[in-house]
Amino acid sequence: IPMKTGAGAGAQWVAAPASSEGAAGSVWRSDHGLLNTGAAAVEVSVIFHPAGGPDRLLEVTHQPGEHRLHEDVVGMLATDGSGSLEITADQPVLASSRTYNLDSTGTFGQFLDGLPGNATVAAGERVWLPQLQQNVDFRTNLGLLNTGSGQARVRVLLHDADGSLLTTAQRTIDGGGRRQLQEPFDRLAGRTDIEGGYAVVEVLTGDGLSVYASVIDNRTNDPTTVPMVK
Image (cartoon, rainbow, N blue to C red):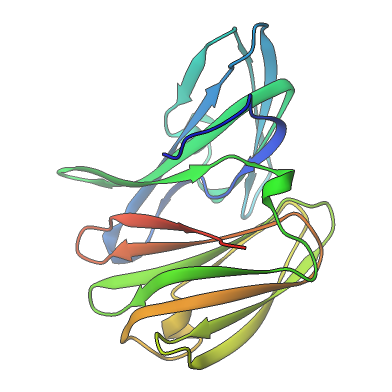
């Protein structure tokens, strides 16, 4: 959980809340945090945009200094699946989340921060995702979130540890939508021996893009967030 400065933002997104099953027997859930650092009560709307199906709305009032944790926020909204959260408030708030795999011994989770508009990228920009793996021990997924109102198009370039370009792919993301590239080193490049690869994502059209990777331990389904680096 990185340190935060300032009061937060009145409009922000959280990339990948889930209440669903995944690869290797994983069972994913997300907890969502909201912190009001201000001196007055704040009205907050949280909209869950699922990958399929109708949006779900949660409206809450946070008192000054109050921090509220919405456990299994997707299930709390009486739905399932994965998608994104859009948070709007009449005053700045700090938003955060933890997405985790449920296991008989406990949970294995990763932090995904609230993203204000100035933390996203637009057409003509590129970002880097280092320290990716796809092998017998680990798998990697890439997430593409479009917080903008218009459609966006990106180019994904997958590299081996020595810098060799393995493959490229283009994807289109609708406004307010999220796409996940499931194990792209395997499914797009045909490689399952990647020990230290990386990805470059170029934004061809659109704005408000956020990109991240999740590197998951195949034995425990323990995920690690890899945020984009500009």
